[in-house]
Picture 1 (cartoon, rainbow, N blue to C red):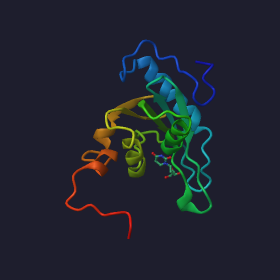
Picture 2 (picture 1 turned 180 degrees about the horizontal axis):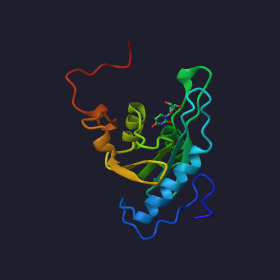
Picture 3 (picture 1 turned 45 degrees about the horizontal axis):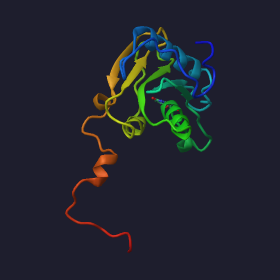
Picture 4 (picture 1 turned 180 degrees about the vertical axis):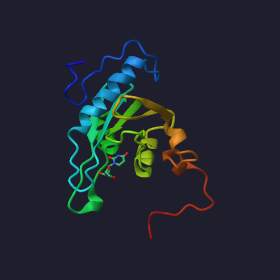
Length: 165
Ligand code: THU
């Protein structure tokens, strides 16, 4: 595991199936989300968040929240991790772990991040964690039921609007 310092490095996942993670792998993923949390740039909210994303090829991408003096430009940890992966050519994911400093609550992703996750499928897992390493698992579909996704754009319409206005 010590070799997993950089974005996109393979993560040792101990003989898991396509999307099933062993308890040990979940523990590691949460550990990496806690490490990513240490990089949080959150001078305005003082609310640190870290995320660790595992691709189906067992590559790891981490992210933290990055805020801005122009408040609405801040980016969440989850979106940063996903964008890092996508920009390196990875779009199929097994799971993402999220960490914050909330002692008594599992950190829950914001609505925007749920939609951002859903872009890459509904049947992968989100591990919502606490600083003590405890967690609860929810699928993207559970977090965002009846969602709108890329497939919907190709569904039958009553009217096709041409691009020429
Ligand atoms: N934040 C995240 O990065 N992920 C979440 O799941 C919830 C919220 C960030 C956004 C902002 O920088 C700070 O936490 C407070 O909302």
